[in-house]
Length: 138
Image (tube, rainbow, N blue to C red):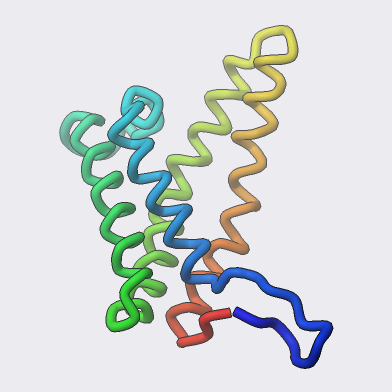
């Protein structure tokens, strides 16, 4: 999508496309490496963690597909924002677990920093999803 007008306009992908790629990659990751996701499923949820990992991966893949299709894009934007808010506690738990298990050395510190950074980074993702829901593609 072209941002701005005239010869100086620069090219950047539409929000829905970026969100579709993000949700698609996350969905695939849930099926490719489920153990990491199983570990962050809140214990308060009923049933086995793997069921929640599989379900959330399937939802992410469905959201990616719905964001790509113009007919379902607006609804998918709202659903994506709701989904991001729903999984926020699991991401918080991941950050807390990383902090507790950080150990010594660079790898533990890096994991701790990356998982903590996910929490505030979800805010612009929720905002982008809400913009898609309102019909703004760029």
